[in-house]
Length: 591
Image (cartoon, rainbow, N blue to C red):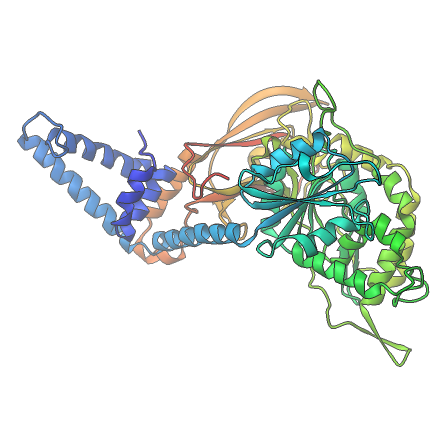
């Protein structure tokens, strides 16, 4: 049996040297079962029968003494191999650095959760219970829009939940919290100084199925706005993504009501920007020009539009199923409101936001010559994270886009493209096809749904995989249910940091599942324990002169992916992608 990592083992590790600590890590990884676990099993037997543990009742015999000496010699030999193996030593150092980096990142960001509501309801209470369970949330801010004479107050809300402070604010007659701007003002002005991130969620959608994965996604790219949206909104937002390299524009719109994380710094900049535009008469044209009317009504109705675009980085959205809070007894139903209809109603605000951003990127000299602003935003690619897994335990990743990636366009063409996009009030055929075979259907746990790359076939270096949200020591199996016949030909790669990838040589077990539209669906099971054990065995048998040039498997694994080494005249057809880990003694405590 494999030893477990427990408190007692941690105490023993404190007095060990580098080599012995690394041996412990390898045991937990199950990657050197052939070379190490057997040694420890024999050593345990000898320890018991020689009475060294204080429990054995048998006298030491010559054969037992010889066996103990052999075990000691084997342990010394193993220690010498590990100590002198440059690649192994480097793997241990990289694992140590990865664990430290993950812990530092988790400690670096602290969140204020913000809710804006008109009346306390079941959805608000359920959302509060969900948020109170999350260790990265440090406080909750409640903004209550109370109509005159309607009563209400803070008595209905607790002062704290699970050790998190709950602060209640009634509506402000000067800046009514029914305005979209209220959440950004609360983040910038009301959040405690110790927090540097804000989370916002409407009270009519249940975000408990993706709260953790959305947070893990934020930690990957803290400068982006991260939100969860439905499939139609995801597609629509992709259409409203812009690049204009000469202006330094790389931005897109994002829907925030279903749950969103954003840096407090972005909220402060947004609030300050609004204040700098507020003249005594808020209806007069702004400093951006007579054709850009940033009025109070624009901020009231379209602050989400202005904010997401003015961050000037493509938003990171997870395409998930949108689930409302149940209004009564019964199961919650999936739903998504009309993204295109909503965008069409906000057409004027979208145009104003884009024009304001364009003007903001320029400095006018002598009223004629325009030069690019020095604050050009760095080029940022849209994240490869696309959907939360069922039970909030991972994120589907892929570099296969739903739409072609945005290319740089001339500023004059951006307005035309935006106008054409906003003229549509209903989703087109391409959006409906994506919605029927969306990303989430690969990780929703339902074998009746499937993700299909409907827009194109697979090309070389296309990939799909999982972000497991944190580092794992004991990844045991990966299972794939797919109808594309090239699944066995895809190379399986693993990584600790999403930058350096290690190919795993493993032949999956294959079983027939069903037939879908003429394609046979098979389940492929990849035994990671056996494959990693073989990889480590080959590493330890490598001649010393090749130690420094031979790549070693990661000691911890967070990212997995299947990558195409050549193109195929077929799309990805993925019914399920899942994984299994062993005992939960991972690199960090479970959050």
